[in-house]
Amino acid sequence: MSIETISILVLFIVFFGLLLLKVPVAYSIGIATTVSLLINIDNLPGITTIAQRMITGLDSFALLAIPFFVLAGEIMKRGGIANRLINFAKSLVASLPGGLAYVNVLAAMLFGAISGSAVAAASAIGSIMTDRMEKEGYPREFSASVNITSSTTGLLIPPSNVLIVYALASGGAASVAALFIAGYIPGILLGFGLISYIIFVAISRKFSKGERAPLSQIWSEFRKAFFSLLLLIVVVGGIIAGIFTATEASAIAVLYAAILALLYKSISIKDFPDILLASAKTTSVVMFLICTSMAMSWLFSFESIPELMSNFLLDKFSHPIVILLIINIILLIVGTFMDMTPAILIFTPIFLPVVTALGMHPVHFGIVMVLNLCIGLCTPPVGTILFVGSGVAKVSVTQVIKPLLPFLVIMILVLLIVMFIPQLSMFLPNLFNL
Image 1 (cartoon, rainbow, N blue to C red):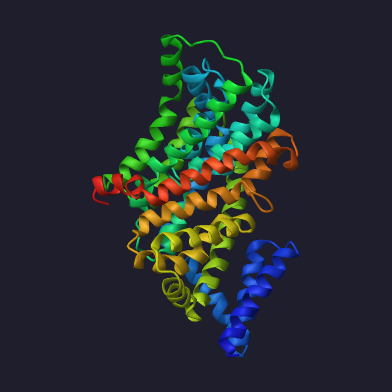
Image 2 (image 1 turned 180 degrees about the horizontal axis):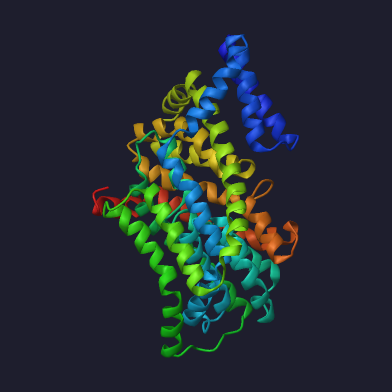
């Protein structure tokens, strides 16, 4: 057995062993990468190499957008924007059977898209909607399931931090602007897929209807939510029009959100130190995940793992559909125990050469990959949104699993539709020549 093969085996054994011991993912990645590299080159400078690759991995102008979007999301979370979006969504659909569940989905789509964070959407929307839904006769476990799955739509509908991470991992094959605009249709499709199941449940369980809102109330709630919704047009429209880059758009989003929250008088200047501290903590976790994942990604390239995987899949499986299904099954499994950011950074260099050899566009694959890993956020043992949504709803994870399963089936069906109909992802980027 060659030293390269031993190095690869050690990498995976150490990584999965540390995960089983409940070592944080970022530390598991960093330690496994260091041990593997030391075995391969058999000298101490390997530690220096890892440090260099970690720093190099963060040396990207595009990554500056992440702390700004995190800060903008934190301001929106505390700035009363969630309530305005919920009230607007409620005025539109609350009169339908199961209307509050639709409100949860629509509000999560809007808030997740504006904040770019599934965690922010799950905590902000869930903390408000769960109690309201319980008063109307909805089981808390069902409400939590709706909130958990609908919160992931904001990772597809721009602005989205994980799409920025994929753009970095793709090595420039997919631009941030193209990914942002490509995520709209799949994100909306996912949202309406969840609503379709809610309609079935609402009719079969005879959930209550709310009062129909008059047009005057709908118009009033729309005016209150207008400037919050306008942020989407300002950020994404500015990027598409070439007025500013995604990184510059993130800074504009912070300024816009801060001014809006101050005008709403939902936060004051005194609240900003706490907001900045919370944003810094979130950013530090994300950046540490990115730098260790970039080091492991470099090691994969050093060991020629992408080429080996590409040759193996293309040689062993002749049909493109079979290869795509295998890749998606692997990613579904990966998503159950690994956070989305390191999964994208580690597996994009491995699978992107395979799918491009099959004729799949890098932008299309990026949307499929993010949608796939969104499912992992809702599943144990690591599912971040699963634990956040359960915690906000004050129900145990075990109580949520059963009502959550049909929603996960819907997400997988949407994943297959998006994967096999490329036009859903590529129509808007092609329309705007991105």
